[in-house]
Amino acid sequence: MTTRDIFRRYSIYTAVIIVLLLITAIITGFSTFFLGMAFGTLFSLLNFVSTYFQIKRISRTQETGKYKFSIGTAGRMIIVVAALFIAQAFPQYFDMTGVIAGLAVTYVILLIDPIFHIKHLQ
Image (cartoon, rainbow, N blue to C red; front, side, top):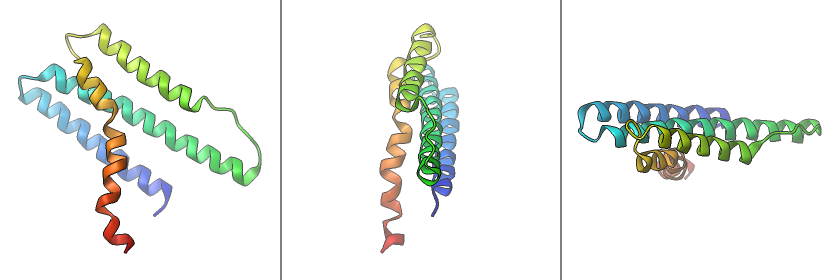
């Protein structure tokens, strides 16, 4: 399985989670929490996309020997801070706890998904 396949699969998982969170926000009375979590998950997906392109850039650097500057980790930190500032500016829509939990969703997927694929490795 290639890096691109894994990226695509995790992106789909994350998009489905965002949709489920938005539906849950509409149905339940905890709309600010679930909207915040969907918002945080969206920014988590942006961080994941940033990480994927960073990995591609590093691979190309190894192949060609030419280094290209990127903001990398600092850029991902800026994305997180931007999500938190937006959530703080609009507390009537986004619960800060939900946003923080949402920011971790992609990382949880990265940790849990390989467990389901262990049988394929054996």
